[in-house]
Amino acid sequence: MNLIPEIEASHDEIKTLRRTIHAHPELRYEEVGTAKLVAESLESWGIQVHRGLGKTGVVGVLKRGSGGASIGLRADMDALPIQELNTFGHRSTNDGRMHACGHDGHTAMLLGAAKHLAKHGEFDGTVIFIFQPAEEGGAGAKAMIEDGLFRQFPVDAVFGIHNWPGIPAGHFGVVEGPIMASSNEFRITVRGTGSHAALPHNGRDPVFTAVQIANGLQSIITRNKKPIETAVLSITQIHAGQAANVVPDQAWLGGTVRTFTVATLDLIEARMRKIVDATAAAYDCEVEIYFHRNYPPTVNSSAETKFAAEVMAEVIGKDKVDSAVEPTMGAEDFSFMLIEKPGCYAFLGNGDGGHREQGHGAGPCMLHNASYDFNDDLLSIGSSYWVRLTERFLAR
Image 1 (cartoon, rainbow, N blue to C red):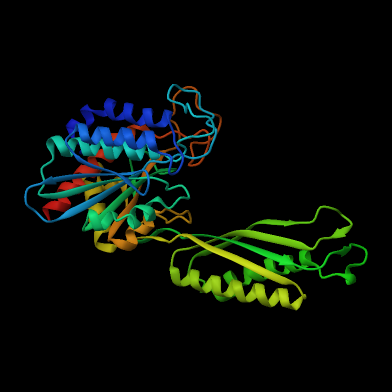
Image 2: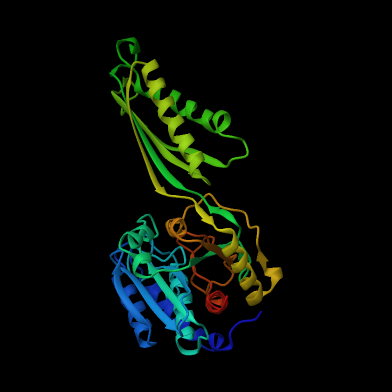
């Protein structure tokens, strides 16, 4: 490994920041305390601070020399509505809220890099530190962009990291093109005419119709989408009726669609609407479909991904960088930033959970799990990567 000695020496300080954030988790758009901690830390290191972008977001600006190049580094700050099972010393002190996705670690790593760049950074240009709210379902990245993030703080490229359980601790995973999928949800309401269950011919059965719609939707994946294009259409809810001997007036089904391209998503949504309308008409029912596009696919640009992988190899060794990591059907709102700017989103291995201290919950150390905890051994790695990435990018 080729970690930065000053960052290694400040590991305990970065760890204290991380654990302080973990102990005081805040949900999307409520990150007031976390944003205050971030802003005051940046200001104490002489970094120019801008508050309130995307409601609770924080932006730090650090400029050296006369160079016109600029780089954006992003970390997310929000927690999840989960009751933590861990009982170790830095467990959540906020009931029903928990840093179960590692955003505490992401924030701490970027703070560690910001401190080093402010005190020791050798670069010519501008670094934009982006501390983003509401990644967990709130589209905080989009909110910051709409508030003028890239108009007020132009960048040539933007980069992000997410810790990833299951990848060996300290290893990087990255890939050109899609690395995470789009996230979309739907709800289909079928309205018919209720009847006695023994006399179904007197009504128009919305339950039967909903089942036919559910079956028909799977034909999109198997018969309309090209086999080499990846997509998931999962029906996760079907609700209807309250009594065994009554055909209800209404039924509804809902679920999610995930794709790696917008073109595939367009195809799926169009086919869904046609199948839903036609099936309902065939059984004399009325239907309403709600289809909402949450997050677009997270798509890494080629040049920036190659460049980032080179920096990763310099920091931890080429043998610890998987530059063709398997993409995931999970979603990430950093995708909105990559629509606006070229850049790269990467995974940093969090290990198998063996790092957790005594008092961890009985369960795997997976994301969105009540027994999860960020691996503090990654802090110096992530901070060193951010610094090397910045210095090399601005020296190009």
